[in-house]
Image 1 (cartoon, rainbow, N blue to C red):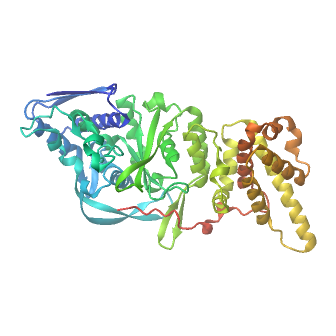
Image 2: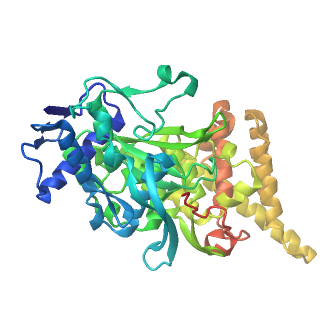
Image 3: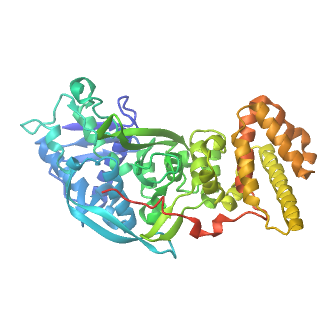
Length: 509
C-alpha cells in the first residue's frame, strides 16, 4: 500500500493541511526516537509532501501508527508529534483541555476515570492557580482504524461519514436528513484529519463581548511548508509557556497571539504561516444537543498588523488576581476590542463607540487607561488621529480644571465622574454627522483654548466637517475619554481590588 499526501491537494481544507503537518511531525518524531516499526513500513518526508509505504495488512499497520501517535500520559492526552511528555506541565494540560473542549467535546468520544486538580503556574513570580481536568482512559483517535478498513483489514475504497469530532463544526445539520446533510471523506483524507489536533493550537477564551459559553478558541494555521511549521509548533514559547499564556480575550486576540509568538515580523517567510483560521464551538438555541461552529475568523499576519498587536499585547496585559475562590485570570477588554479590529483588517479603534455602549463597559475600558494611553502613542496609525485624541485630552484636562476651580470656590469636592458620564452619554447620543458635530464643537468650546486644536486646525477640521468621518471621530473621542490620564481620574490599572470574578476561568469538564 502506498499513500501520498500533498499540501497542494485540491480537496484539502486548512484542517486537512494541519492534519498533514501533524502527520509529518509524528513520523519525524518516530524517526528521532528510533521507534521500531512494523516490517516493511517506511515513509518519506519533505516540506510539501508525506509518502507512506507498507506491505501486508493495512489495519495492522494503521493500528500500530495510531497507537504510537495518540497516547495517554498520567491521564493526559499525549501526542507523539509534540513529544508531549517533555513539554511543560502547563502546556500538556492546555493541549489536553483544548482538544477536549474542541475536537472531543462530546462524552462519547472519550472515556474518563474521574478528575484531577493540580496547581499550575500563572507566570514568573506569580501565584499558582488550581486547575481541574478530566483523567482519560481512552479517546476516539486511538481506535479509529476500524472505521478506515473493511472486515478483511484492507483500507476502504469508498467514502466514509465524518463525525463532528474529526472535523469540528462539519457535522450533520439535521438528524432527520442525516443522509443528505452529513459530511463524507475518502478514508485517506479522514486518516489525515486524525492528526490535525497536533498542529492546531488552543486558547481558553474569556470575552466581555461574546457568549460566555464559548470557552475555547481553536487555531488552525494555514501551512505552506511542513518542515518550517513543525519548527514553529515546537517553539519554546509553546512548549514551556505558563498557564496564563493560554488565555485570550477573543478570536482576534487568539489568532494574533498565535501568529506573533515569535518576535520576527516576517513569519510567512521564516515559518511558512501567512495566516490562521480561528473558530469557536458552542451550543445554539436550535441545536442544543450538539456543539456547533459559532464564529470563525481568518487572521492574516501582515507586518503592520503584527506590529500593532505586539504593541497592544505589551501594554494591555491579562491580570492574575486573588479572589474568594482562589486566583483567577482577567483578560484585557481593551486588547479584545483592538485585536478584533486588527484581525478583521479594520482601523484598530473602529466601532468602539458601538461596542462600549454602557457605563459598565466604559468602566472596564477606562480601567486600562494607562496601557490604552501608551498604545495610542506607539501604535502605527494616521498621525492626525493621534492629534485628534491629543486635542480631546487637552479639552478634558481644561474641563476638569474648570470643575475643580468651581468646586474649590464652593468648598466642595469636585465631581469628575459626573462630567465623565455626561461626556460619554453625550457621545452615545451622536447618531449622525450633525449631532456629532454639535457635540464636539460644544465640548471644545466649553474647554477654552486648546493648543493642539489651534496649531493643527486644518488637519483636525476634517474629523469634524467631513460627514463620512463622523463615526471614526466619535470612536476617537470615546477612546480619548477612556485613556485620559490627567488629574481627576481614578487609575484603575493600579487598583486590582476593583476587579471582580466575572472572568474567572472555569474550565468545563
